[in-house]
Length: 325
Image 1 (tube, rainbow, N blue to C red):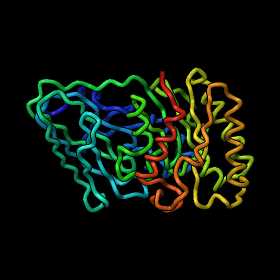
Image 2 (image 1 turned 90 degrees about the vertical axis):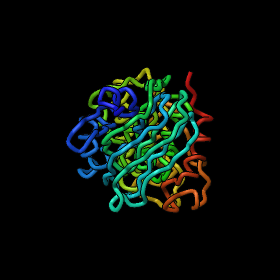
Image 3 (image 1 turned 45 degrees about the horizontal axis):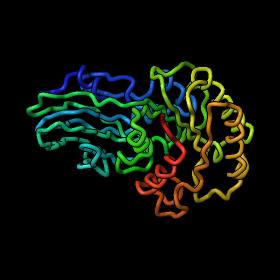
């Protein structure tokens, strides 16, 4: 059988909206208001907003196999795009391309054993995936896989998934799996603390939120801007989420952290964010500076964006601090 829009809505996690057009099914992780907010920083951020970061299909089925067809579309400055498939929590397939401009077509078949299995399909974080169809072979059961919690993740490029080649290993996806939480990834690469994201509440009522900005603020804004933007960001957020536990990840190590910018030293910028966190009772700041080894080979670009190994180190440390009850 071929999944229709109603079944897709049931098995899709991490999307606030699914839109069908002549190209196929399009998945949106951000609301119209949030997409407008990101363009206030830079108009071209709208392209990053439509990447399928954090979007996945997660279902339980007794199908003998299922097939996935669609196309990959350029959305960020990265051209690699991969889809990961896990069966009962074990990664079994990693499909995609190093350059979607050359190989945009997706045609994946996953063999199953005809027994009841939980399947997770992680869509690309740094590209836009448009689904043409999902087909199930000999399935009498296709049920949505329920999560215990819902989590909103705000941040810049690292939260969006730069530079995980394995989509399943982007830190937000790893947290989702470890915490049994459906993740809605709201991150935009190169973004700052942007209070405009909280002009209205998200349609998803979260049980947990994570926030990870600051490295771009330190690199490109002033002390006064960082102080004001981070405080107003937290203030606006708490108009809607004062009862939600919020974890703020202070900026990770970056190779050039010893520079002094208009926002001061890297340590001073991190202190500004930390002090603003302390003004809100529901916010817990986590010092992530040592969560990834300070070795270039843990970073895809050798100085800033974690690779798959770096993300694994990051999450193993985050889980020491983040707990769900």
